[in-house]
Image (cartoon, rainbow, N blue to C red):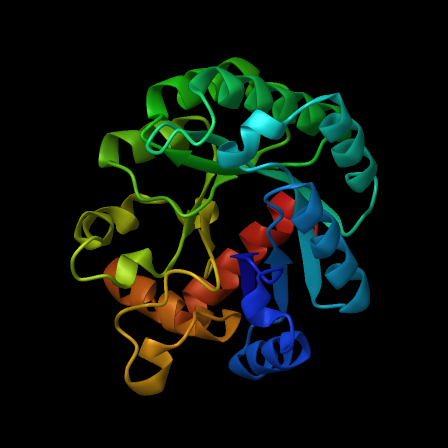
Length: 258
């Protein structure tokens, strides 16, 4: 299996990164893509990926930090994207829920990330919250030029899911789907995602699956929990764990050129 989104630059993993990777491998997770959310974490993600063969990285500035995006950011991200271990541009997109950066700042940063993705022909690692209409239109206008994209940690509506799929985007599913409160809508629509567009991720250390038991349920999420998420998805889609594992791995390799 491949975990396409884990925040291993978090301080929670600082002293246990090797053990975290080892535990993931024992669980059947052979590759992990470490998410970059600003220049510092993107640099750290690349450093980790160069130290550990199982890791890869993304490079980008999360919409929460879009107010800090400037020409220096473009230069820094451009340099990071030259590395083969950096496999995607992002985390990027729009978040109109909290607006830690203004919508205008977010849109400017997002469009610049898209330009970077077009220039380096690497896919986009997308975040979106309560900004679907604007994000969809920007992506639709650029779709012919970008290599591809994954909507990371999708939690939207069925209409939004279908619209993203109409752009031939990949859909990333996290442990959110295991939540008996917030995940019910996603549980009902996960079988709509075509086999060749499904990706799986943990978003570690966040979104610990609520269907875990014992100490694991009370602990920070780790990539070793990916098989649990995959098995939950498999049951909802009427497929086997082996099927989910194989096709999500193939999709990850195709999108990220692994």
